[in-house]
Length: 268
Image (cartoon, rainbow, N blue to C red; front, side, top):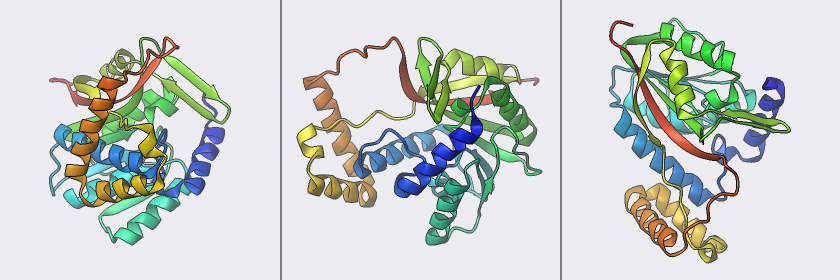
């Protein structure tokens, strides 16, 4: 069982200590944070076609990085997180960006309900922090809030080949397999129409990453000129992986950040 109060406190601490990266874990620097954000956003835009008449729900919004990216392309975004501190950071970012068609709500992923119907419901790296029963509750609630013809996108850290339960003090998670997630959504009439890694991790020479000036310069380029900088970093990462392949992980478990797209099956 996941201890939600402990987990909430852990995430709130992340918001207080790393506000600029709130909602992005396992990154070593601002460059990797900017790279991952651009790479995942680029992939997300290929998964769904955002339109100005759409309502979008993001469950597990963290510090608002996704909601603020989505909002300019749609009619309205509702973004939900169970951490007051994460919502505080998100609202500060919203105010700085001057985005009006965006509402941040403090609520549990398994309990949030709205009278609005959403064309896209995005589980933003949140299902892994729910027990199985609460995960099913979140999916069941999504069914009632999904507009006709709507789509659910899930971004989860998936485990291969077996389910992995992480209980590292306050940080707790259940890393499910692709087949587990697929089966859960099938219980509520959804079919899996797409599944792939959300992004390819950055891997640059270590001697570059220990030089603050280099990291700061590349971070600035990644935010100001994302397309050429992303391509440059991707090419460099491919070369590094080719020249110095990573050894196989010692554990039988492996986790990857994956996107899954679910749509209601015909007749559901």
